Amino acid sequence: MDSIQPGSLASLSGAEKDELMQQVKQEIAVANAQELLTKMTEKCFKKCVLKPGTSLDSSEQKCVAMCMDRYMDSFNVVTRAYSGRLQKERNRM
Image 1: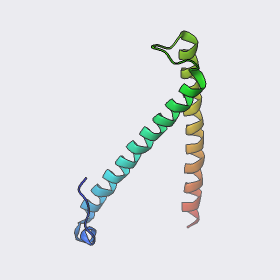
Image 2 (image 1 turned 90 degrees about the horizontal axis):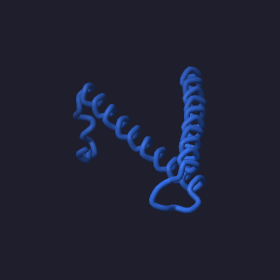
Image 3 (image 1 turned 180 degrees about the vertical axis):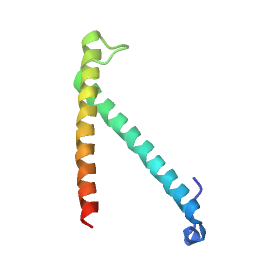
Image 4 (image 1 turned 180 degrees about the horizontal axis):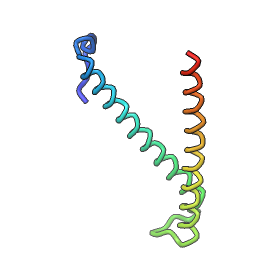
């Protein structure tokens, strides 16, 4: 994305501002997904792979799969709770 000069947002039309906001939201979502995947991979690898080698044995594969499932389940619970709180705050305003 091109850098935005100070004051240049004022010259954008409503549709252009909406498009820019969508692009920013999309980039934030991609960055969040990349961070989630990186953290999940690091934590599950550290937990499940005690002696790194050229491949994972079946117990390591099972451990990593279960760890990633639990991590995603936990992430989804936290995300839903956070979204619910945000919605309640918005409704109060």
